[in-house]
Length: 217
Image 1 (cartoon, rainbow, N blue to C red):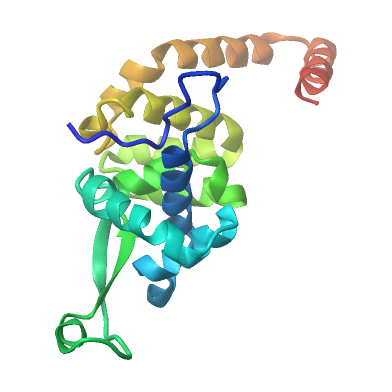
Image 2: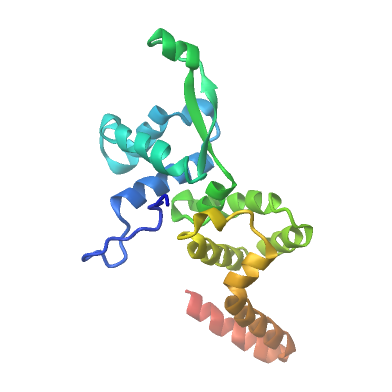
């Protein structure tokens, strides 16, 4: 089984801190989720971007990126080769084959939507994932939930992705049955709150909202 390190934490004295491998793979996934230009999604371009993040030379991180792609992220169907760019220089064989550039798969985009490393793009990335869902009722419901409660939707998806991080082959396609299996307890708690809130008087709703605002600050 391929081990993806995206959610790995240090076991000794780490206190939940991510391993260096996890940090690198998360940054790679986040970078590919945001960067659109093919020329910026080659191995060397990824190495330059991550070198800037980790304050090192791109040559020092290139071999790790090469290994992450070829041995982990591509076999795990998180990243795939999108196409090839003609190189400007280099051996004749390389000029013939071209330089590969990469994109995230549906599974990769789903993981990317859960990462803090993508910054403000979480919701827009998740929206793309939802549009790819095959069940009409699930797709429409998730889009509506994302529109009215983006933070809640992202939290639920993170819970779903974390559940399948140890069974990554089952993560996609996302289905209502799989979401229900993973999120049933969370959804029941949210539903209880919504139903109770709607039944309260205006004054009590206002008081509860104020209390929730205090807790969220």
